[in-house]
Length: 238
Image (cartoon, rainbow, N blue to C red; front, side):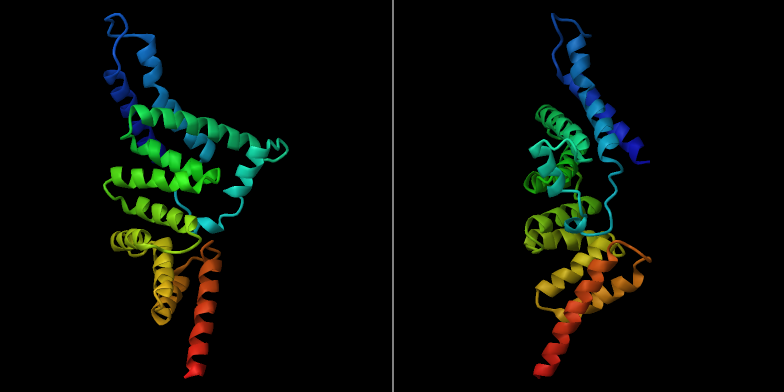
């Protein structure tokens, strides 16, 4: 179903660009208009094929090993022996095209999402944060994009949850109370707000609900152990 929506958005973007571009020598049809108008279609399918299914994994982005800085470093170094090299170069070329298409149509939601996810893949967290901000605003505050945007902001800030990320997590949780990653970040938010008992309850409930071998399990278990140790230390101190 994802590719159907992607196709519709791409075709719509192509139509908008075609209509907005001037004709050549007064002609309604021109190869230039047609060529420029199909750019969103090519980019959309290219990004989907290279990056893959855009469904957000249920674990913090910071823990998705091999998806960010290592691949980016290999691409910059020109290490053609790295298995990610060719794919990273393809993604970079697609992102360059996306940037150009967004200059023509800055309200292309799928373009901003693709730019954000592709930038994450290449380790450009700052550009990913900015792109997700644009996508989230254009989406009408979609809760799935809210948690993806929050996840990226938190990664950029080395795990710290600022007021913007807090609002994003709470919005996502309000719309999707059972979303695993939203629940995880809610627990971390409580921990950082010096509410260890509440955080422990939230994360224990989450851990109990996680499917077996869920990738979020290790992070949740680690946080539970740290909070339990903190709680024990405070009890002993009293």
